[in-house]
Length: 446
Image (cartoon, rainbow, N blue to C red; front, side, top):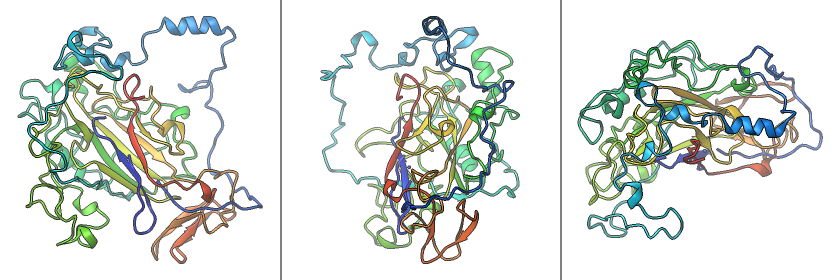
């Protein structure tokens, strides 16, 4: 993901497809620790995430570890109780492994076909903002649930096999357009609701039942969102990792500029969003090809946020925690990938100061049909040790008149916007700008 500054010094996140956060701050010379708002004790012994002591016999523990199944075995489950191997994801590669060149540098690999495309002859796609919304627990449950995979026309779906297909573009977009998040995010993982793709997964695996929860975050206190009350997410957004499809323009009204002002407004340099002259003031109609001369990408070959181009951008502001609900809409069959990649995900916000359960640990992957709630506090480094009374004006949340922000300073509570900022805790020297976020799946991009 990527982060970039807006007109009020926000920061943004970007993710490379196929496969962000910033603010001002200073330290105080007389730190004052605010009151704790959360229980930070270890999980109890009966908790599924209870801590264990280091082994006394390290060699025996290592030998036992080596004898265990691969950590990502579940991600390559196949029908009838069979598990694939490291070669399973390469099954559909255009070139069989024996005919592929070395992965070393130089690879001496065959050049990619250009289909007659020449350098610098296409319009550069600019980032499309996710756009956040207030995390509102009072919203009613939506009418649409996360859509299941169905067969459909290529290249956006598989015409014959549900396990190698995905939801229809129309169904996925209709679901994503709904406001709010349901089930509503919580500190602990949601272990009650079931994966909405349960029936399709059972049919592929020929195994009944499949005990797959709706949320991919593991259960227990060890995987709960740390300091949930202190860093309660005030804004949120949702996206689905999905196969390539036509952009339906569902995020148009979530752009800060709204295609109405500056160079993004009518007549502006960026109002036309692609090489197609009729696509102005919207991303609706942008397809998944790298150049107009090149073919549209197959849904098994290119996996992106929302399944669409342009690449996505998240704009956030220091001091305001954000929650990303990331749905997995990739094919159930682990080999339905055109020869590279795996359908399980672990999302990492690169170089962010994120708690472990939301940091995209390579083994914390989640499966098709599930979602994972990543909660990023978006706080300056030194939060617990530097400028803890939030008195340095250089450490600040950029704001507009009327905005408020909870700050856990010497007098915790909602603070009001004053001259365009609200002072927050932490070291302003640690202010960052643009990050990228990416898949961190074990053995692939980790």
